[in-house]
Image 1 (cartoon, one colour):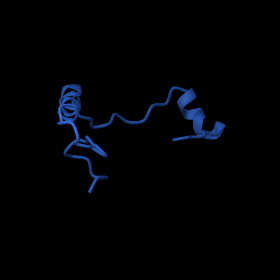
Image 2 (tube, one colour; image 1 turned 90 degrees about the vertical axis):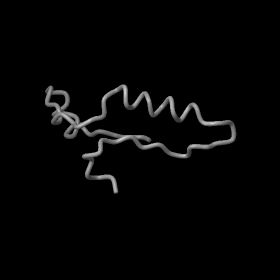
Image 3 (cartoon, rainbow, N blue to C red; image 1 turned 120 degrees about the vertical axis):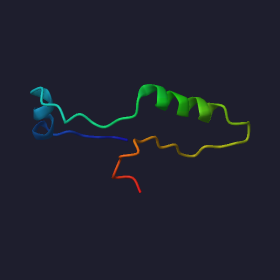
Image 4 (tube, rainbow, N blue to C red; image 1 turned 30 degrees about the horizontal axis):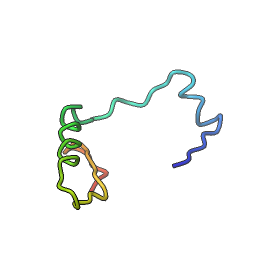
Length: 60
């Protein structure tokens, strides 16, 4: 994915302004998901894997 930031878009980040803290999964939960995916048998294809908190409202 290619992303181009204009100077107007990048200036808040350059000024040290950070977005609000996100509600994220603990790293050990994400790691367990990766281990699960890697442990699938040969011939099993995982086309997409989405890991998000149960409280995520932007995912159906």
